[in-house]
Amino acid sequence: FSYSYTDKKGKTVVKFAKEQEKLEKFMKENYPYPYEFNDENHPEKYKKAQKYHYAITWGSGTRVSQSGQSYSYINCNLFDRRTNTELPSSGKGTAYAIGIFSTTINTLVYVYEQRKK
Image (cartoon, rainbow, N blue to C red; front, side, top):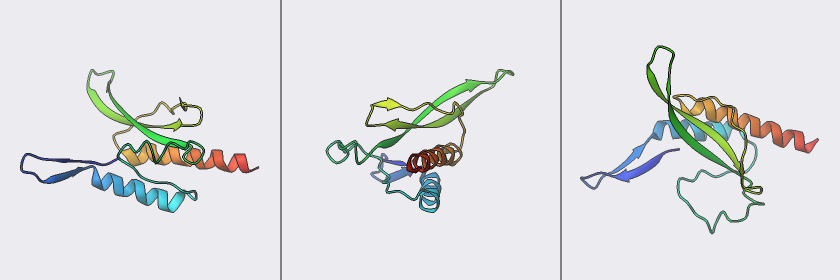
């Protein structure tokens, strides 16, 4: 979720580092399967879809409330790399990545557990 860039002074700036820490902590405590956090594209490493079944994709947008006020949101989806399809989203967006991320990951854990039965 975090990303970095070099500012005009040559300093590396990490955006959303605290939010990234929350995501990593959540995964460590709640996701019993192998995973990797990756903020770069490594097509050679991740080309085996049988090993790396899913990818988390992030999106964002702006909504306008009934009162006319607009606000930004982010959402989190699962991308099935074996079938090359975006799985249905919850349709919910939030201003906090951990909220939508935890819901998405809990759903994925549930799916894995159902497949074991």
